[in-house]
Image 1: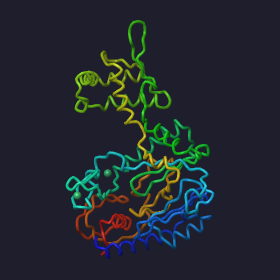
Image 2: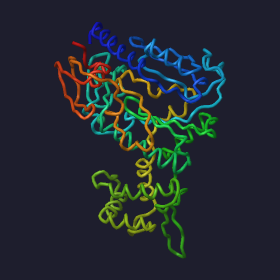
Image 3: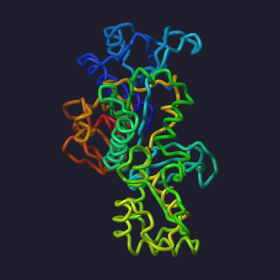
Image 4: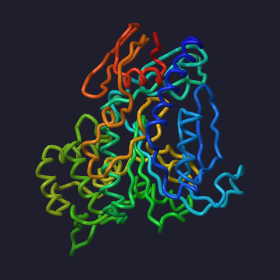
Length: 414
Ligand SMILES: [Zn+2]
Ligand SMILES: [Zn+2]
């Protein structure tokens, strides 16, 4: 897109953002005076950081007058949040943050709505960007990701799993210590403010990530064992109603068996024959496992079950982004601010409203209509209406839909 079109877009979006910050109160984070703030601005690549605000009014004034394209604050608490050097800030603790992003989930629709373009030779393709350009081998590849309902629904299912299965059931975190936020783009954030967890260092937080993902999980330490009874060996496994990973593993193995397909089982002959036997009778196998009996089919040894258990861990483990949780100095998006890549609100969600939360409805803030020229856009929904796909055409759109396309850089103002 030409530079003057881009500038015109930015001026237009900035004016809309200004009005939003003039008319809407941004929710300051808990203990705001101990947080570092950082901002990005329209037309600039760098982040302005090491700022602090002692009361909500000064933050609000800053947002309405400087109008950042993106607003962040530290998950950490500092004695001197505005000190220019990290070691001068004096770290006092950090909320435990989880990030679930559609970028890290395999959804079939990415092949339709995501694109990559080699900055070196111009080669482009659909789906996730390759490590290096298949044509020229360069690594500078621009990604043009899109946010879609299928991707965001997959992210929300992961979010609910994280909260219900891990944070609440396994860690005992109360609903009043959890804050859930739609990121404004392709995912969700969970902020845990439990006092006892604030001191955890990077390594401890990494352990939490590993636990949730099931990294290095050995089924034999979770009840899957071969026991000797008299002269024969019998197989024992966890029950579905056990706490923590034991029950999760049992339920995951059942799910894995039921979803397993003969077409994608390993080629190795012994393994292949054993799995085929199992799959021929998978409903009975599932019933048997539900009843806690782990050797329903003759000839299926512990190695086969361990193989299935490993697949199950991938299925039932949490899909969280490790660096976000492990980094105790990271800046995260400020809830109720606007996301510069979409114009959507970084939207806090009540836990009870999680299943009905609709990012394409509840995160919209702009009202009205405008005509834009769309270079190219996949099909998308905003509110109750579907739009596109568009290719090189003028379209009159609801303002929130138009802002999304302008922010994504796929449309310009007439
Ligand atoms: Zn290339
Ligand atoms: Zn998608």
